Length: 113
Length: 114
Image (cartoon, rainbow over all chains, first blue to last red; front, side):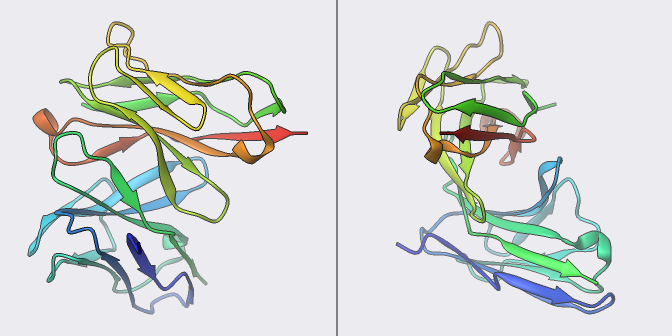
């Protein structure tokens, strides 16, 4: 069972460069989420999606864009990376059921220099 | 609004000690409550959950009871092992009232020493 798969697992970017993080889930989940995890701050929601073609802003959306063209994929883009975006990024997915839990990927460690 | 507050760490225990990690929540409705565990270098994994008042979630020797009167969901284990060393996150969702987001605490790091 693959579950939630994130690519890449590690990346180093220079300030101003762009990149896309890919999240793929094989559980036919309706909801998908992107979080960032920073020391002492827990998980903060960047953007999320409740279905194909729909996205919404979370707590810290600035500097990021997302797209959900296919139900199983959720892409997170950084158009012009900044050192403040150095973080570990987690994708998660969830069934739409009232009490459903989130399933997480293994994370992407991004360093912006 | 919704929020989760959990005890700050780090917590260091000797093997076979009793563990409690406190978690309290604020929610407008009747949320579902979760405990997640994160081992070094990995993503979060669901440890247990409870979906209504007085429910007890349990898994791998860990337990937590949904207490609506005290808005709490404390995590307990009677005898910890070195392999329990990880970061633990309390979380809630309240889909019936406030949408599809999950709300996480800041995490509590646990180290168990032999």
